[in-house]
Length: 219
Length: 219
Image (cartoon, rainbow over all chains, first blue to last red; front, side, top):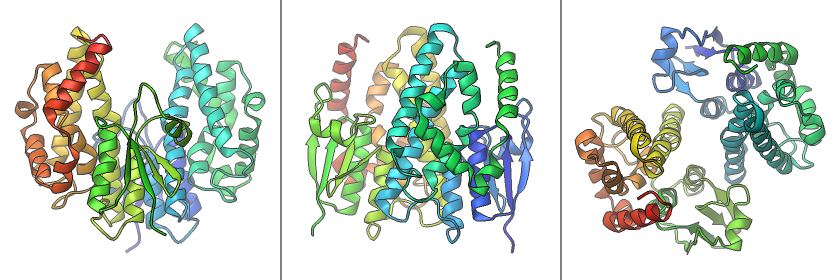
């Protein structure tokens, strides 16, 4: 029996992009279903009753939620092609640590840019660069986070890369100036076909995000 | 060469307890180092420069941080005895989802009981029971979260169980009345030697926690 793979997703989501990227890396065919988050589908509510969020990965009818958990699942089930997690347990633990840091610290800090103005925005900028510079310190002079090859941590962070233009715009700063190594790393990742295919156009994303920000009364 | 295993921990920590519990399950000898969180050791700051938090698991000189990541590492390295994660990838993904839910939702909600008074405490109680009842719904009539055997999700939640008396005390509620299945499950887990050995006395823990709460000006 062929695998039936469905992805409930939304084009702007950096979390959804992680799953799409993993699916391209593994060469897995799937059905993509765009969700309208203002009017969630019955399927989404049924498949992710706890969080009611995208992405949801449905494999032969069974749902898996939370992007990093989905990507680990994909890597374990389709392990023979383009391994994402390192095979060594210690390196695997380190990869999980940094991917978790991206969600817990960097993503949380980047949300601060969305929802704040004035002094609070200044505080959010500080948190944002503290998290991004910690990541830059970990990357250091390596081509990828795990070393010589594109892997789990790269996948977890690269889907934020095309949001950087939006962050630059609302924060009135330059990530290129503050974190040049991260930008170099991003350009290196973009040379990879799976990444180039997954990341939407940065200006289109920025316009859509500015529009959303206006709707929630932040402009 | 014998493995050198060191744990930087603090007796009250439910996260530290997870690691101690996993080490007993696996029959691993280790050196325990109690940290004074008001005066952190040089070793802790060196081994966990990102979060500066316990627990830190040091295996042959190399540190691993974040309790769920440590427990997965232990399970992968000492995989031959008392497996904690299920062997099936889908069940493993579900175990990771619920362990993550415990940290993201249940633990966050329980922190709300520590740091709030009055109306905010009432809101925190609501969040607390919403999370705990979601877990109770997932447990349902199974003996353990994963089914017939004690596993990763049980380990992730059981170290909160001896904190319940403290939560009852400060919240002026009864978890036994609100979530009887969770309490039954807790008693079942406590019949396991590793759990009984790991969990500190519930009254001693409550007294120490009330003392701490006084220090931070919450009584």
